[in-house]
Image 1 (tube, rainbow, N blue to C red):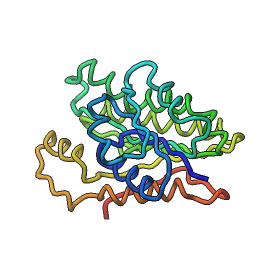
Image 2: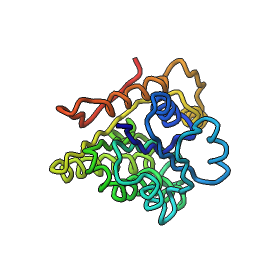
Image 3: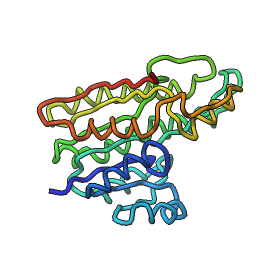
Image 4: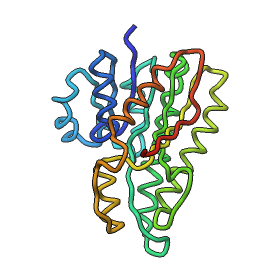
Length: 227
């Protein structure tokens, strides 16, 4: 039976690489994209995928994704994320709201909409968290708050859905060599060298391992750090 996966954040970075791996082996993919233009941009990379226009920060997007996914979903990977760094004294309301909406509220609502299909498949929910979901440093308050919340969401969901056979995994990558990491280095005023950090391919492979884990076990938390 062909398996079905929903992957958010497939437009770039870790999410894109994971979606490519899943597509290459013939899995069915549902990939939310924020605009019709973004759908057209990604179509050549994922010709067989269901590219669903659904801005995850907008009301109603979760139901749009669930309708596209259908009655059975083997896994959903929440890889989409945004970041704005700055001291609490500096961050404006929009910085707080955007990070909480995309990094926390959207995963909660999309997961809720997909739960009947996840239960039918005894599927897996993967929250791509961050080291910031375990400890908060100066200038990281809003982003870390969203990721700490994502950790709480995963923990509660895991306990709630255990009886339905749905597995929930939080993955905590340390610094990963992505465009987001380049932007973080600019904010920090540091020189960026991608070779210093975890490669996104490594994280994608780890996520694939979580999705493919045998039915007799579950991974609750997985932490990846640069060597």
